[in-house]
Image (cartoon, rainbow, N blue to C red; front, top):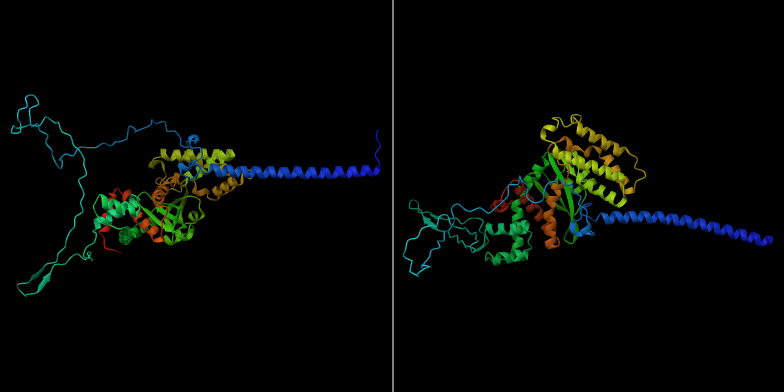
Length: 471
């Protein structure tokens, strides 16, 4: 047995105690870093997973690993291609053609005899039609004012040239109609519009003139724009949404309020409630308002609210894929079942009084399942899932509104469709270079989309607006 002097023993004991403290500190520090790393990994997973088109509004072109992308759609069991009840489309012959071209033999193919003076007859029904576009040439209409002398009082009476003609020569409404159609419907930039009018219609026009035409068209469309706004404000169902966009080199926003027959679009530099209040001060007192969970949208006054189920399902998919959250999977399954049920219900399945929520057993069961999921303990879930759960609890009465109103959709896809035109326009042009340009597109596109929803020919609808007097 080795004996150690007391002084050395005490030093060794102190050293061991010091090392123990350091080891304890390192263990605690390591555990803390492990927790931090775990939290960061979860955050990274959420962010990476959120960049997929099935878990966010990110377009499919930006998906990571698109070849391995999962399809979030539920299989319907139907075969691919056209369905049996699809009417189909094919090119039909015109009963009375615009021109008939007869093909006759001039010489005998057997002996070479001249047949040009011999009468011919049609070979049964042997005929074929060809659809062509004739050469387009702009017409120049000259308006001349004539005067007449009255034989009774000798007064000189002059013919009046239409008031719309201000200059010695100017473009007619059909040209501005084409410009609006190319810009707002086909999303063409000014330069391409000018080239198209020059090459196809033989009309010389500058990009500045194109801009001026669109300005005048917006002023003519404003009365129709106001009518759409007023009708939206009195509608029974309204979907609202917003999307970001570059306007005059700044971050701007396009808002839309729409339903099955109307579309109203507005541009703004504010994403907040201020913009909604600007256009609809009283909100939608007669409507069920369908939107996502943006606070400004939920703050909008309405008869009832309906949260977009598609948005909720995307978030839940993200939580389950990134965090393996079982609660998210169960809630997603419930929402998918509810959406499926919506498509199965007919108008007679809905109660005459929407406040009567006890008439449909299937709906009652789904409501109870929702309450059970919301009542479960969420304190140990990821903070993002906790915030999501609290949001659902706060807006509980706005989740299944569509199950009690026949015409209310379960999602806000109609609003997102209204924004596709904005995204395509910015992809082609890069951005809206001026605030007025954004406003102009919003006004004209509102008229175009509303005309489309009501089965009108878009070009003819624009022409009707162009022939209106300026506001």
